[in-house]
Image (cartoon, rainbow, N blue to C red; front, top):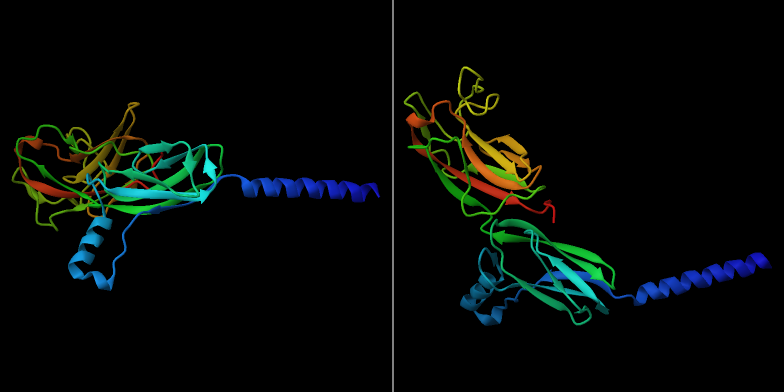
Length: 267
């Protein structure tokens, strides 16, 4: 008899907890707000709608709606670019709309809505910010330092995937002192150490090299070239480098395409 009563009490406690969970405010979804096209609107208007639905760097107007059950004390939306916004209180039943303008890196982002206090739940979606890559020219004439930071972009965050390619489709080359002409893939040979003066011995001679200098003094060096990809081990400025042992006699330029996928980056 006592065993039956104990079982009933446990069941009652579990039911009470389940009912409480069902009534707790909860984040359930997040969506990128877009307008719908329609055959009745005509091709020009539909083209305008499709254009406005794109998420483009430095263009205001992108927004997200977080929905769910009840009213949270506070929620946070992480936009996938290292920035976030908190809303308090947050009426999830009606839907909470949050706008954002992306700057810095384009490419794939993971946008996340999470609880701050007095509710439960966390959910994410993936979006693409255009343009998805940065194209930059690396001029060789007059260059005296092997590495230079990519201008006009923020640091690469730890966990981001960096991919590089030849923006010129193999047409842009650097003449290495009249000795050889090379694209970003460089020479087949590995750069030698002293007495030679290659800045990155062990990597391909006359090639593109990528370097990330972290704020704590750490440095990550990666071989560049068409389709080369790596994950940043720490946050820091991305530098593009020429692995040549005599920079001052070089001529020409490279065209480099840089893509940064921040979906795996630390928030």
